[in-house]
Image 1 (cartoon, helix red, strand yellow):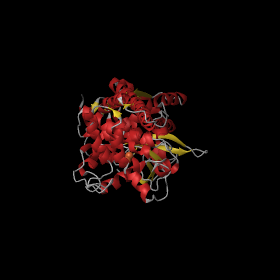
Image 2 (tube, rainbow, N blue to C red; image 1 turned 120 degrees about the horizontal axis):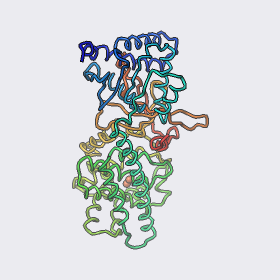
Image 3 (tube, helix red, strand yellow; image 1 turned 45 degrees about the vertical axis):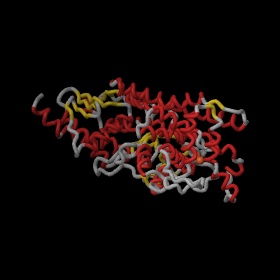
Image 4 (cartoon, helix red, strand yellow; image 1 turned 90 degrees about the vertical axis):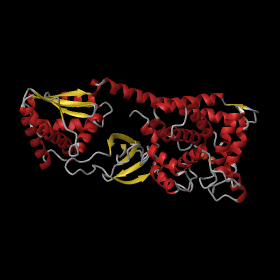
Length: 483
Ligand SMILES: [Fe+2]
Ligand SMILES: [Fe+2]
C-alpha cells in the first residue's frame, strides 16, 4: 500500500463518505438549484477527484465495517454516528455499497443529483435494488455500479429465516386462538371433562418458536383485531407471559405450563353474561362481584379439563392470582397472605398490558403502548413485581411495536421494530400516508435513530404518541404485510 493510500484512509476517505451521505440527504430536502445542493455536489466531486487514483472508487460495507477501496475506516467517537447512519441507509436499499467508475469525473451536476435522488427514493420501494437499477438505466447513468447485499449469503439467509419465523408465529397465534376457543365452547356446552392435548401441542410449538426468536413473539400482540377481543386477549397474554418467562430463563417445561396457564387465565369469564362483561356504564354491586370472581372461577373451571392432577395443581393458583396484585390489594378479596407465585406475577403484568392497550369499544381509557408501560412502571412494587416489570419493559422497548407516533416533520409513523435491549436507540418505523378514502398507506421504513451528520441532531423527533385505533389504524395491516 502506498503512503498516499494510508493518508487517504483517515482523512479524505472519511470526508468522501461524509460528502456522499450529506449530499444524499440534502438532495432529498432541497431543490436542484439550492445553494446547499450545489455546494454538496461540488464537495462530492472534489472528494472523488482526491480519492480516486485508479479506475474506480469503491465504498463497501462488510460486517458492519466501512471500507473505501479495501481500506477499513476507523470506527471511533467522531465517525460513529455517520457510519451508523450510512450502514442503515444502505441496508434499507439492499446495498452493501457502490463502485464509482472513472467516468464519474465527467458527470454533470444534474446527473450526480439524479443519481442521489434515485438512490434516496429507492429506499421507499418494495424492491429497492431492481427499482434503482432500472432508474439508473433510464437516466443512462453508467458511471456507477451497485454492490448488492446478496453478496453476503448469510444475511440473505437470516432475512429469509426471519420471515419464516414471523409466519410461524402468526400460525401459532391462529392455532392457539382456535384451540382456546374450542375448549371454552366445550366447557360452556357442559360436555364433561374437556381434553386439552391439542392446546398443549400448540403451546409446545409456541415455546419452540419463541426460544428461536422472542422478538417476533413480543411484537405479535399487535395482531389483535379491534372487534375480536375475548380470545385474542388470551393468546396475547400467553405470548407476552412466555416472553417474560423466556427472558428470565424458565425451563422449556415451565414455559409450556406458563403458556397454558395464561391461555386459560380468563376462562371464568365464560360464565359472565355478555351484557355485564361488556357494560360501558358503572357496574352495580352484584355485577362487580361477578366480574371479580372470574379469576376464582377460572381456577374452578380448570378442574374440568382433562389433565393430570399435577398439572392442574400447577396452574390453579396463578389463575386465581392474576388480579390480586403484588401487594395483594386486588381481587377477589380474600384472606390471602401468601406472596404471589412467579406465574401469577408474570400473568398479571401481561394481562394488564394487553388490557390497557386493547381497543375494546367499551374501554373508557385507551393508552398508547408506551404510556401503558409508563403507567405500569409507576405502579411497580405496588401492583407489579418491580424486577419483572423491568424485564417486561426491556422486552417491549421504550416504544413498543404498534405504537403510533406523530413526528416533528408532521409525518405519522407506526413502530415496526423496537430496539428492546438498548434504550439509547430509537425505533424503526414505517411512515403512514393518508389516502383519499381515509385509509392509511404504508410508505418507507425509517430509522428514528438516524442523525444529521452536520448537527448530530436526530433527523426526526417524536412529538406525540397515540394508540393506533385512535385513527382507526390496525397495526397488523402494516407491520405484518409485505407491502
Ligand atoms: Fe382476568
Ligand atoms: Fe385477562
